Image 1 (cartoon, rainbow, N blue to C red):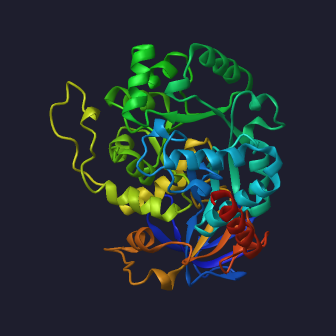
Image 2: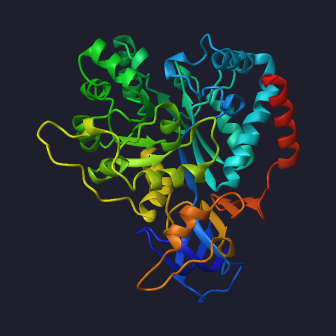
Image 3: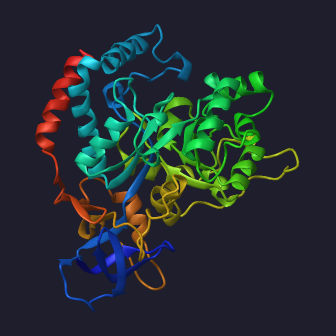
Length: 426
């Protein structure tokens, strides 16, 4: 299938025009624009690699807003919001509700697909929804799901490569867990993923239990590598960042979640400059991937609220360099893909998987795209959203056409979701 005259995002972060050949699920060729017979005229579209939501909790949309005003360790506690969370959480954990819970997840995945998300790393929210169920539901919708395997689930799945192994956060990071994780590393060579240094309280827990950062603990036991993904990292210091850069471990930056929870603006620009792979995630109860992209760009236009990042031997100010729009688009695509060891995803180039998002160019205007100045990346970051995403290819197959999912009935799912939400949150 030839996609002709496509204005596409090149791997270097610039835009160019070309004819793209999609064959056997991959981008097989990038040819000069107008040089090939057309199967799909892309002259009215801006074509991006599929977005990667690098940290997400499906089912949590049912609890959206209930965490407002609560510290992380007060969630599900004795407060109006905490008690409401507990009621919804009890419904989610009940296996008797599994059929309806699956419809909730399908609806959430459809919402992500309409944002142009083709890959989502899903940590889930309930005990009833297994990682295999989440992966299968993603296949139904047309979204590639990398599901988190908790406890010993990695020992029970047919294909461990489709899942990540959970790294316990600081309150549950015990010596017994570390020993089990080392065993999983040696047996399965999985991608490890987990919450790390998200809040001040979590950093203090690590220091109290281990006398050092949780990142230092993971490093000492050989659990940091290019196959390790950490979520948040708001309280990382200079030594932590240097450790991640040295080991190749990645961070999924969740700017909207971080701000809503404790107002922290971590220095994601500094992480990238230090050599850390950085992706983006919507996190808890949030399916607005483009809102996350915009927040990531806006927050990196100012100095981060993280003086602890400067080491004792770095008395000078933090760099005043800012993230570009292209930087943030890369975080939302290639950064997330590389974090999960998916070199085949996140960019448009020969040999890469054909996960492609087609944006309505007219809905992005006005913009300039010339040899001396291009504002197209800025237009994408500031204006894109589900109303601008027209089509989506996942592994070369249509998953979204004219804004509507191809593989599931979105209207029926939405009606079911809202009925369930009304009943569960009443």
